[in-house]
Amino acid sequence: MTAWSILSASICALIWAGQAIAVKLSVVDLPPFFVITLRFLLALPLVAALACACGTSLRAARNQWFILAVSGVLVALQFSLFTIGTTYTTSARSIVLINTFPIFTALFCHLFLTHSQTNLRQRIGLGLAIAGVWVIFLHRAAEPGISLLGDILVLLSAASMAAKIVYVRVILQRLDPIQLVFWSTCIGMVICGLISFSSETVPATALTTSALTAVAYQGLLVSGVAVLLWTTLLKYHNPNELNIFRLTSPLLGVLGAWLFMADPLPPNLLLGCALVTAGLLSTTLRSGRAEENDEDVATSPTLFSELEENRPRNFPVSKNMGPDSVA
Image 1 (cartoon, rainbow, N blue to C red):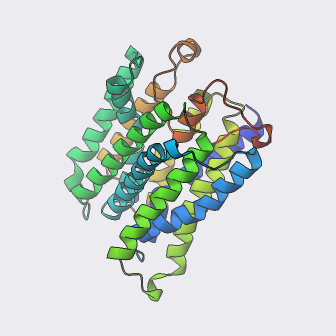
Image 2: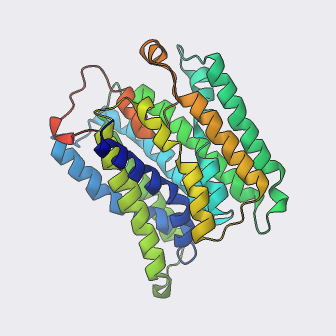
């Protein structure tokens, strides 16, 4: 890898690591569905700009709208569960739990994808990750102010992210990836916006600098800068070559939560984080031969890695996109 690629991948990992912290800071003053709506609103122009740069049409055919609607519902569900769940738990716990989604991805692929299979190393990795989650939940009472509901909601968000990845694997044969991301975000924004409009109140005093900065971080950096950098990297590097950077996010997120949010770091959380990271490292890093022969194992750590890996063989890639892609 070049120095530029290493720097770009490291920046992405740092941005993703701060996502739970940004969510936690934003919901201190703003209601959750309003936060999600603003996040999507900020991300849409960036996705549209990417489509323009790639020469991709965003117009959807009539027979594609149901597929897009399902994807949009999954996007809204994932972000709703994550944002509300993070409200009731710590940033440190949230970043570890959301990164367990490859566990659910592997399970859903085994259940719903005909040719999906896992090898012994991946099964051991999944076992380690599951043990890490068990350790985190087992000693939850040792951390004051932590709600079991919050942890469960974030874990359900990880499961919904996995469902989205498996769904994307199937429908990408009929849709352009950028088109899918754009309309899924639009539909998710409409759903969360309607919920916010009908059930939440946002006084002017709630629009604090810290809250708006945290929302901007989520919409512009997480769904913008990180998306574009990762998308560029995926063009020039195999996703498994980049996984090592993505898998540092839980560790960096836990450290960031301790430094900036004063989140407690009890031994069980540190042990759980280590087990989850080790398990996902074993699960997602496959050998070169396995990569060539096992295209149906969905253990990529991001939706956008999944999009790139499962792009139809004749799908055109614009040379203007540079070294890779992610949303």
